[in-house]
Amino acid sequence: MTLPIVFAVMAAGAVGGCLGSLLGLGGGVFLVPFLNVALGLDFKVAAAVSLMTVIATSSAVSAGTAGRQLINLRLGMLLEIASTAGGLTLGVLVEHMSDALLNRMFAVVTAAIAVLMLTRLERRNVLGADVDPGPLGGRFYDDESGRHVAYRVRRLPVALVASLLAGGVSGALGIGGGILKVPILNAWCGVPMRAAAATSALMIGVTAVSSVPIQYARGYVIPPVAAAAVLGVLLGSRAGFWFGGRARAKWLKLLMAMVLGSVSVLYFVRGMR
Amino acid sequence: MNDAEISRLEGHLGRLLLGGVLTAAASLALGLAIWLTGALPAVSNVLLTAGLMVLMATPILRVVVSMIEYVRMRDWFFVATTLVVLIVLFVTIAVAVMNAHRRV
Image (cartoon, each protein chain N blue to C red):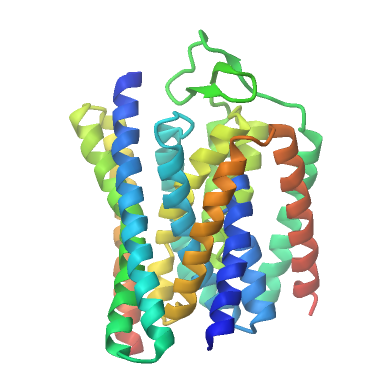
């Protein structure tokens, strides 16, 4: 590996980090295909390196949003039981699963969520600030409407199953798993888009840590590649965080649906090989 | 748990995450720079490994700090919740250590 490759990995990380912090995805959705297809690294190496950047994105984005009450700490911690259990299970099992099978499953899931996002563009999920948000709900200052808003969490079992699946995807495919949680929390569980993204961004770090030490011990994390990717992602997520407060929820959802659609097509093609 | 307590906990966690990620980034940047020069491979190896270790340890510490805060608030439901997450992470590390030994 040479200087140009280090910079290529860093640049890919920066693009992934920027989109990741905008969408609460973690950025791995872009980094895994780049490392795997463009640089020709083994899929499991690409996934393990990507998980390292997921941790970095999580810590950096959450440090930025902490104090604005967007992160729902209680809901996040409860869902982390499911997401870490999923991450650990698939982190152990992934050795015995074929890449083609995982790619096809992932393509189906991302396509379904993209459609879901497109059908829910106008939903806001926010109530007046005087509403009791219940034990798991929250309140925050909404930049878009310029007032304090509250929300209640509905269908907790759905959120737990989504987190378990997201954890499994994180452990098997090296992406953050926010790609699964954020749309489901938003569309079915009553959590506003920005609170769902902030809570998911916090969760993906600890979820990645439920599987990445196993990949690290297996020798899949190549230190200089991981370092370049992590540094690129950190620079990119700064940019994404800056844009994030300014982008409208509707456009955020539309962008997310487009990203999911592209990822789905890529994984269908890869799964058919 | 009232709004002031939530803000205090969020502040603690925010500083912890920022400190962890900045420490990791500094170590990784220095390690990568030295690695690119080709000199001192042992030094770059230590810095890169330390950076990745700090990166992985930060979210675990976040859960530990959350648990301490929930104990202080006597919020036993969330003490139990954080404890379960820590047990899962402990199993992960145990599996990783077993894998590392098998590889050698």
